[in-house]
Image (cartoon, rainbow over all chains, first blue to last red; front, side, top):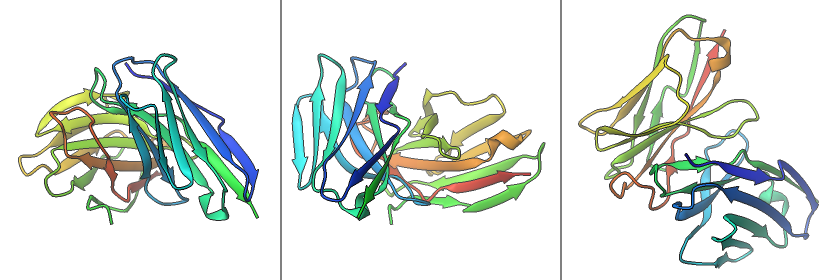
Length: 112
Length: 116
């Protein structure tokens, strides 16, 4: 089945700096790659997603890139703000198993 | 508000007991997913149902079972509870796409289970 590896597990940046989180997946049939943000004590919420027919997608300060050949995708957050502090999860799905498998998460801390 | 309703929000019980967690998906969503999130852990996929039928299974313990009813709500049954089962259990729903993930999963607020 699908396996998703996510790095780093923790990331601390200064306000205004950029943050990059990387994920790799194992199932070459996966075609949907979302990123979720989970604030403390709350439910995960989708912040951006990308499909396998697209190499890059951007939404304001957030961008995601996908390299299908290498089976890895990344989340880029520019001009980080304290409210970006949360746990971020990558996921892969739509493959042979039809479900959505998450990485173990990255705890991002943005220091003012 | 995601439109996914989970009950109960909090549950405290003893080892060896059995509990049932309930999930009502968003109106029109046919797929329901259950995830377990232990302290400082990621989202562990347990099981997925699509339109009443089991579609995919993760590392769900034999002590755990689930089902999706004709009205599309789902229940997760946890039995012979152990201390290690203490976790936040999330239900999520999506439109479906014949059981494949084709878009956003909408998560409920979760059911926090504490086993003493």
